[in-house]
View 1 (cartoon, rainbow, N blue to C red):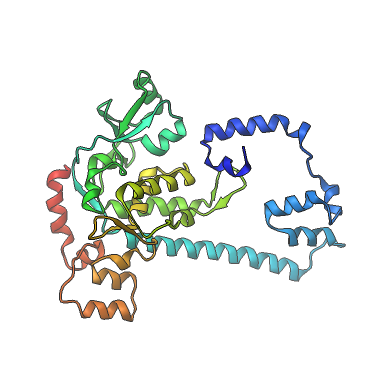
View 2: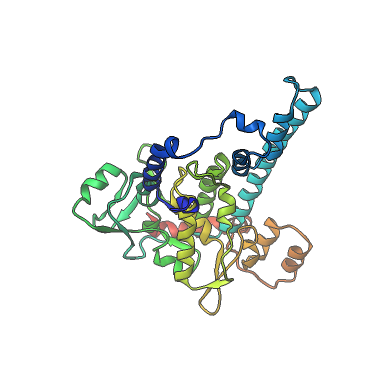
Length: 345
């Protein structure tokens, strides 16, 4: 197995491989030590620097002759830390705004689409259960599952189960819509469950919270990549079939893995990048440019206020109001919400 293959393993498989290598590390591998740092041409030092990406910093530390840092060096270090924190905060805010603009037209449109569900092969680890299945409806059990132990006990005689998920939902064939049953349960606390109509915005809150709290370090595998960058990963082509879209989304979910956020919210965020065209295929955009494919000219201007979006707005004879912001502005939100309450309850 090559090093790059480790990132595609499940958590259980990775731990097994880690333990197998760990038992042999001290007997079969040379472990670099402090003396290696004294030899500038030492290959061990080069390997350390290649892994950490800070050869210059390591070299400066080696070359130091004084243990005390100057005021200038201390200030430079503090400035770099502050600058890094500010950049992270700004990037988080920009991502939140971009994802909100991409998802604020996505909502529940029915109580039950009647789909057969997404198939999962058993057994399944607790981490995979939390990521993909918890709080979802399992067809074979005819109920929502909230406990891993209960799920394992109830499915001990099954080879696989079919789970109602965002990816399997038939309602999304109507484009950017989902049903209540495929969304699953959302717990407000104390087993108080509900289904938000504006599911796109709810997913935005969940995803951006996870992205802000964690830059994705994939279980110490030597790979550090931001969740926001993975969610914006490019597809090889600009348009695709529904099957290709779903496979692309699944591959992104696998790369991210479980980071204390359920996959359904990431699925909605990824769905927001796709738009159904007249040929029946889906065009893909980045999260930040997704709003530019919408027909709501007022929403385009609200989220991207510039001369072009303003000109397109005032030159439009009419436009479809599909954004939460424009529906509230035009006093349409409450009327639309009341009509949906009849089937959501």
